[in-house]
Length: 260
Ligand code: GLP
Image (cartoon, rainbow, N blue to C red; front, top):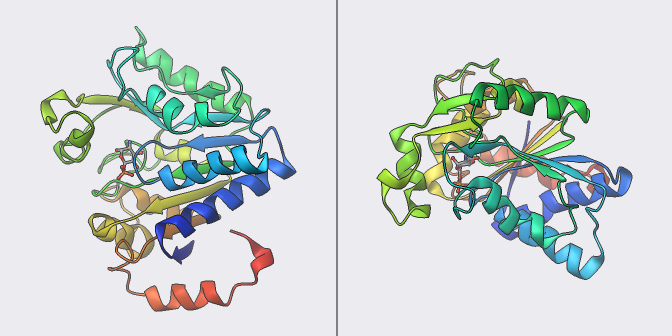
């Protein structure tokens, strides 16, 4: 696991570099897209490179991590609409290139299975962008999630609903109680995982993710078992890392040609 500590815009540029490099080598790459505020610096940078430098997503495919259950088609906080607004419509992703779990499906169990099959059918995700919840969840895999889980329905914790209430007029009761989410094993199947976290509120989750024991209580800790994870954090999110100085020295000494 590589930890890079820096200011948010720099983290966005690093993640965008990795995506741009991937798309140049493999224009039909499969990207994993996350919602939330953390990936916005990456999406802003990708949109800028698309506008100003011709970075093209025309042949790329993308899969979302998760979706609320039951939010109507045109609800602005439906993750499908959030992803369209934050990234898909800002670049040249082809119509239909982005897929997400169907939180409005009549049969949610069938929808989850179909989603796993759709990811497998394109050969899996090449690069997954991730955020992390204050309780250590990734996608919507809340504490207690099976470390071997696949896409399924989950109940959101009170903490997550309170964290996300800011997107629902500050009213926790408007935040759905259920979601469909890629499982931890689904996420672990991605070939490169780039996780972003900023702000002091994420410091404990980042400490557990990087330095804590692997445990379903902090679901992100499963990433310690992945061979290629990049953790991009600002000073505040890094403030509880025991080996922060070591991570800084290691990154400073890293040859530029290595990339992420
Ligand atoms: C939600 C999303 C996660 C995201 C988390 C943190 O719960 N399902 O994918 O990582 O929020 O969001 P933010 O980056 O806004 O703090």
